[in-house]
Amino acid sequence: MPIETYNRYSRWLHWLIAGLIIFMIILGWRLEDEDAGRFARFQLHKSIGITILFLSFIRLGLRFAYKAPPEVDGPKWQMAAAKAVHWGFYVAMIGLPLTGWAMVSASPMAIKTVLYGIMPWPHLPVPASEQAHDAWEAAHGILAKLITYVLIPLHIGAALKHHVIDKDNTITRMVPGLTPKPLLNWRWIIPAATVGIAIISGALIFGGAKPETPPTSEAVTADVAPVEGIASSSEASEMVSAVAASEMSSLSVTAPAVTKWTVDKAKTRLDFLTSFQGANIRGRFSDYSADIRFDPVALETSSIKVVINLNSVSTDDTERDNTLKSDSFFNVASHPKATFEAKSFTKISETRFVAKGKLTLHGQTKSFDLPFNLKITEFGVKKVANVTAQADLDRLGFGVGSGDWASTDQIPADVKLDFTLSASAVK
Image 1 (tube, rainbow, N blue to C red):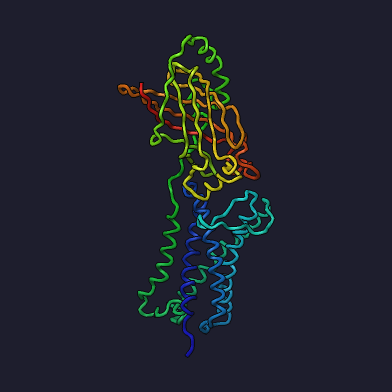
Image 2 (tube, rainbow, N blue to C red):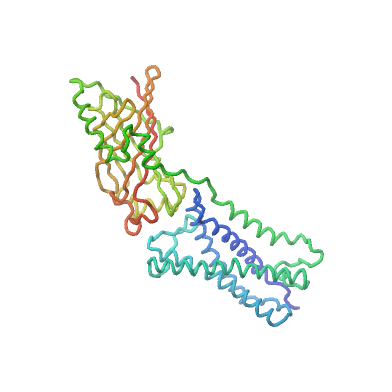
């Protein structure tokens, strides 16, 4: 009895791989969208690419293990074209993941790959340089265009021509029972669902609003300093020196008792804003401790100490967070904490102050001035303090971002700190 269809394993793999390829094409078109899901889409693109690579090898093995149905009769040029498209798909299905894998491996940025966020994946042993990366990227792009604009249209067009015009069994070898008449056969649900689900999933997965634009230096100045030109902690230090001298001269001989504040973590956030490959990113730290003893009328005895657990960093992407924790950035294995401690304060206005202290990050301790706004509200015997603070932090000054990550082409040197704090005290 002659073989009329491909074996069931090949048929299921055909539609699974077809759906994944269409999904990857749509996802690839969205890789440059600068929204909150961009990084996650890149990671999923890599994960599914490796999956397609393995499925293609399995599909190729089944092609040799099971006898295929006989070729449909036709002109020699048509048969040659069919074979060229058929093997062209194998070249693209295997070549695309391999060139993508090589492209990531050749990147001087040394970005770690974790398939589906759980399985670490090694790099290929290829030279790492900008030139090698660009070469593999060009090859990847050529194969992507080949499969998208040549192979898929030819494959679909030829299959429909055979089914609708020639009325032969070409499509039925992959969809048994799909007869040419009637044309609207329920078995069309297989190819239709494959294409529809792939397109919708690729268009919607990991979508998100465009991330909030990091505040500019001018915006920070307007919020934390009444004097034009105070845009960073170092500039703030210079501009308030005269005010500091005035404060010291007006101190009382006996300073009032300082107030100890208890932080309300439900209303407090320690955020930072940066960007990666042009896409804005907002991250945060959720685990920290704060010892705050502060009173606007007792600055000389006030103090602040905040200790942040860098392992608690979150940017809403597991793989990116793991990169931040690695030795290329925070290196939490050796330097798990960041500490800001200040015992000197300058009053700029009734609600604006500068904490002049020391920041310890990545094993380095440097002077760091933090301008902040303070509003204290009294409710009977209870006082509530609301604080907002913004400042620029030079990550490279603390050695955060080593090796190729020290380049500012992908990630800027300045990181915007954006803190909101709520604390209470009893009078």
